[in-house]
Length: 234
Picture 1 (cartoon, rainbow, N blue to C red):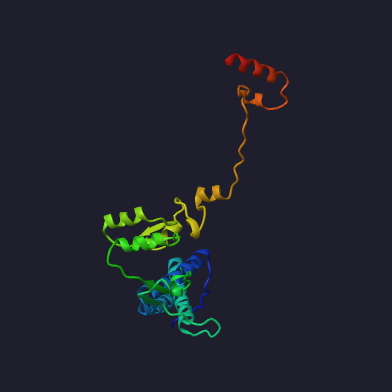
Picture 2 (picture 1 turned 90 degrees about the vertical axis):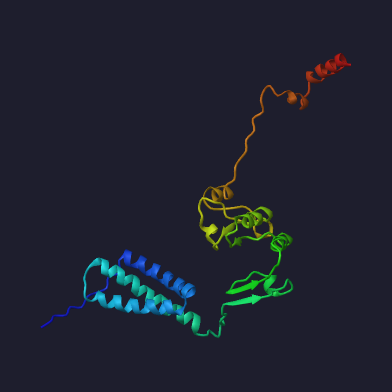
């Protein structure tokens, strides 16, 4: 005869943290690896959830909390992405090949999963295109040719650069983050942010040996001495 006891799921800070990480992991898996990865996460979550009722160890509860969070995050993501929302609409990821300068997508900021692509034949063309327009907030270079990379970094101006990835230069606390010209002014992160939000108060003390003070009123006998000096020099 088996005795079954109902176990309560206690939300500890560690489980809450694992839940948050799981949600982010589920979103990343879906976007980077596709729906199959999300499917695997769901079944892994169910299996781990079943293990929860057969073990009272804290480690198992933490693992299950992570897997359970992955399941919830993946299901929520499916609802957001796949269920049409009449009020907001649905924008699917798309690549715009052969984009031209007169298109709206090339004239305004893009807040959505749209990627315009412009082809080129010579390596100097993209450099000339970048320099012809406003300074970008970020520049991303992908490739293995160090000489080509250095050519782009040397001949272009941008707020920041990430090589062979995206966005990560924004997260570096030991590097300044900011734009140039139309993309922004100043920088923040660490000491740069402190300096940008601080006002230095300059104070100047004139030395008593600075004889330029003789040019300031009241003149008194100073004019007579100056007149005598000018006569002596002439």
